[in-house]
Image (cartoon, rainbow, N blue to C red):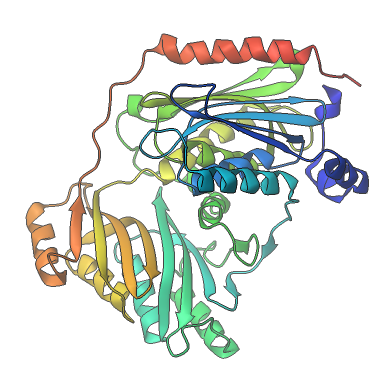
Amino acid sequence: MGSERYQAGEVDDDEYAKLVRKMNSPWVVIDNDACDHATIVQVDCVCKHGILLELVQVLTDLNLVIKKAYITSDASWFMFVFNVTDGAGNKLHDNKILNYLKTALESSACSITSLPSSVDILPSKDFTLIELTGNDRPGLLSEVCAVLKDLHCNVVKAEVWTHNTRAAAVIQVADESTLRAIEDRNLLSRIKDLLYNVLKGDSHTSRAKKWSPRPHTERRLHRLMFDDRDYEQTGVAKGPKKSRPQVTVTNCVDRDYTVVMLRSKDRPKLLFDTLCTLSDMHYLVFHASIDATRSEAYQEFYLRHSDGHSVSSETEQHQIIQCLEAAIERRVSEGLELELHADDRIGLLSDITRVFREYGLCIRRAAIATDAGKAFDTFYVSETTSNRVDAKTIDCIRRQIGQTILRVKQPPSLSPKPSGEEAGATSLLLRVFFKVCSFHSVRV
């Protein structure tokens, strides 16, 4: 097992490691016959820091649902097995999707992840990317949108998350006159200064980083919230204790691993969210078992820190628990879901968020998108003192905005939870599988 202790930087920078990857190209197999209820996707490749997150990102970006997963490493080699379905719970039969999936997984397994650098306004040819973090408060998004409108910036796409009194946003804007990226440096500086004034009063507001010229938005939001230490805030607990995520951290002393076990309500992208945070905390996953076949999801990870050691203190264990709970709760949407479908125009988002603000609604989460002159926006709203929204308030807002433009979408009902014995069986299976695999590992 000693050969599993690799450093993230060494994997990326060592020329011999690059040669090994070229000689041992990834092997991707997609099987529709082995399981009655899901498509089996198996990936075998050379160990690389962050490869598990890269592969899961490919699956989630295609809106595939991971029902089960088994991950194990043997010396310098990884094996990943995913049971996946489409959003309707069906196997994958479209050859175009299957071919794209195979190509994307092979590409991700071969790629070399670069380390992030610091910046908070990033221009490209198509749009300018703005990243924001700060204290959440009623009307914050409305004020941000008003500033952008006054500076003749058109919001092309945006994601906004709030958690534990913190807010983070990744916003793509274009120049109103050219509908391209903003090139005027003076205007970029003015945008930054005015948005900072909107968010002033928080020492972390101006901190932001980028992954690449086209970063993955949800990975950035996790990173922004993590860097802003939203997991330490003393917000109000979301619901009763039994409905909140349950995370335990123990040490597997004989194998020098830290074992993280997690139970929570299942939902889309849950595995992606937990892996984002483990990656941001610089933990490497060597073995894992995932079971989300029912309404409750169970995840078990055998991991080490990037320095090769397991967790050494109760303080670090407590931080892992806090951070994973935060990772799960960030995407959990409080309040009422509203969908907006309308013809796009300059200032549309500013006008809509202003109406929400005037009626005393807080935007808990938002996803903004435009395509071919149309706006497709989703808002999760609540009143300032409660997650519930009065029906009369929504009726008034719909009359003002447009009955056919703004639609109320009710949250889905939840299925009963599985028994503890069913979830525990997955843990037992992983331990048996892990012990079998350990006989083939090399200790140096």
